[in-house]
Length: 132
Image (cartoon, rainbow, N blue to C red; front, side, top):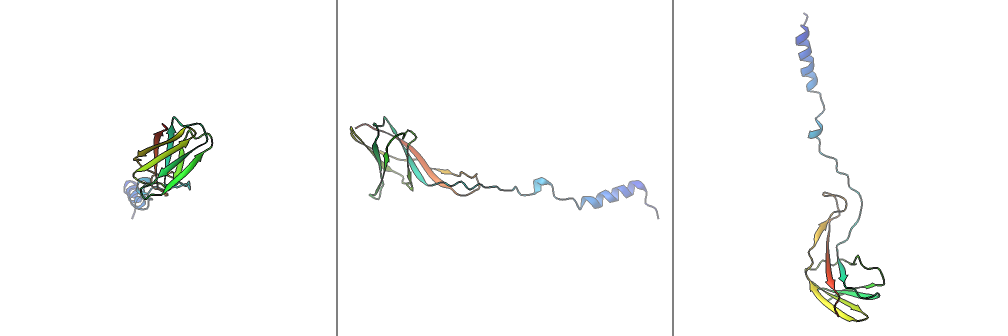
């Protein structure tokens, strides 16, 4: 028995269509993550900063504090790793005296390796004014 060409072509196409790989849209996207690290913390930028050297102290609600010295070039701020308190007191001590200010940082999540990649770090940046 001979199958007409039109029917044979249709039959071959029907059989082959069942063997096609899934379309690219059906495949889950490949997630590529880099390995950049990050830390939770607070960056303090001092406006009207005293001449270096000076110190910045961050007082925490539990009564402890963290201190960082600025020897020179601290225009980008001083980073206090691990500080994620809702309210802190920032004390700046320079040659002209001490200045203190309470601030409420607004933390955001940072994902340096992409939106679905670890790590996730909470970070905030505050500006305080030196006014002894």
